Image 1 (cartoon, rainbow, N blue to C red):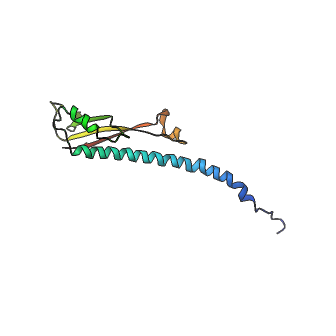
Image 2: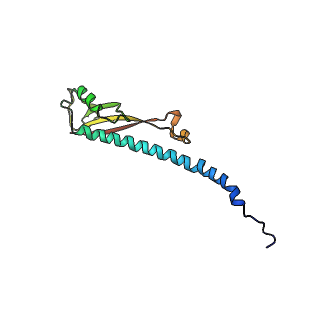
Image 3: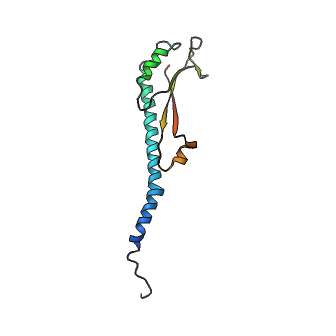
Length: 141
């Protein structure tokens, strides 16, 4: 065994380089994805909760829901404000009006989610835009 060199300190010398590689190449991008996933799930759940809250108080008149809509939007989660609440009548995705009160009737609304990734900004933020719009609709009649 005289030709085998003593290698007892090799791992201690390589550990900082391996640790740095694992942190920058694996764990930080994984943390970005996890944070983005939690923000998406939270916003989606806020949309669903808003849908449930307005299921219990449908508009009295689908032809003119303006006062009802402003009251309903006030019930939304302040972290994920509802940007547009629309009542849709019929299968043609037409907005409800005095001339269009066909069944089925839907609520359609949206909110925005803004991501702040540390490492995956070029991947998650297309063209520098880190704000995504989540849309949701639910039948109420």
